[in-house]
Length: 569
Image 1 (cartoon, rainbow, N blue to C red):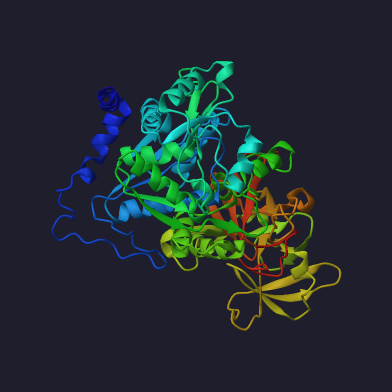
Image 2 (cartoon, rainbow, N blue to C red):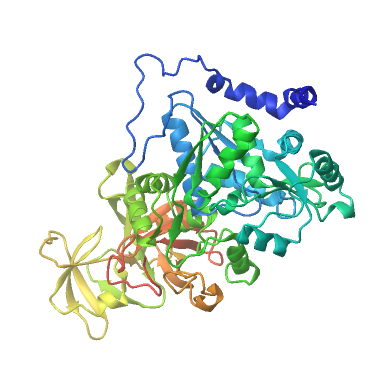
């Protein structure tokens, strides 16, 4: 039996590939160092070093279950794994933990691959737990033969109670031969095998509940999205993870602290099977206020029409926050700054967006837009006629001339925000941004002013955005978002459905700078005095206007008096 088991392992294509991948970290006498003269980069502030890590030999893994879309919590896990693999000159394995055919779909698997690309994560290898089903079954049989596992048909509720009360199952002391016969019955997929499951025989008196004879294998006749109907029973994550981690050469398994009780169980399985030890490095999961991250709860929002889909900009999914306007390098920096700490905290979104603002401000070109419904027309009496088509040049970014120049159309008739125009008085001088100083000559009966060629920009206290009233301007829609959950921190006893925010999206039509026609999807810009925006849909024509999504900047108040309809942060 042992020879059959070893031969099956050796011949398995996934294990052969993993062995080659892990070869550099598995040899006891391998030289554990970078090339001479090569130094590791300094640890990012907030990050901890990996215990027992050797440069060039570190292998980390990110094992998503293809049963939903990745959210910001998953982003922390994958980016930490990627950071350590790159810092130590090692490898990152992305392994799809596809052990539950009832929940998994090709759609989710494809979405995870896409989201990893969005995060600029390039794994060294992609594997699947399903590639190891045959090997895992052989390991399960070994536990049975060694008297370390037994078959149980105790009803689920009774089993839960017995585990809570630390009472052994009546079938715990069955012989290995009896257990093997029942295991094969279960794996055969016949109805009479459905009630049976394989349980580890560990310690029912343990203070650690995960050590009280956990379930390792169950029957499930649902066709698997990769292996079809080849298998009728599947290992639990608790059994598969320590086995595949060891086989694939993982040196450091990064897990959230919610798995901490399971670390003892993880080590027991590797020890019982004589597998190479994998070090566990625990870190706290990332929670956010006004947010739910549970797949079940997020699915509820989608199914009940509270969002438009998994990529809705109000959603905490990876594709949702990217659509909202997160810069991936800012996200990576934010997560690394939180480090691999074990302290669980509820993060404020404002801190997240404030870090993002520092990054996007560096490359966001500046444009102007005026409210389409609340604006005032002003006549600059010495300004050029509209048909003269005159322009002034302005830097696309006031602090970075390398981003180029843009031309600003000037004309006798200009549009001002109503809130700005209402504040002006006769004789007052103010600045039309990127053009110059204007002195107000008339307020009643129509706003009029005169352009002052040598006007004093510093003396003029008010600086307003504006647009020439010309046909070149384009229609735009500014979209703002608010939190889906009204309560800052949901307690365990809270029903999240009772705290749904009914007003989470608002649209404002504006008249846009003609330069906005050049923007492409995903571009991030700043509308001066309004804020930062991501292009969700480029301008097509008058009936298909430019759609811009507001990117929060972490501040409770907007950057000017141009207040939006919803919260700014």
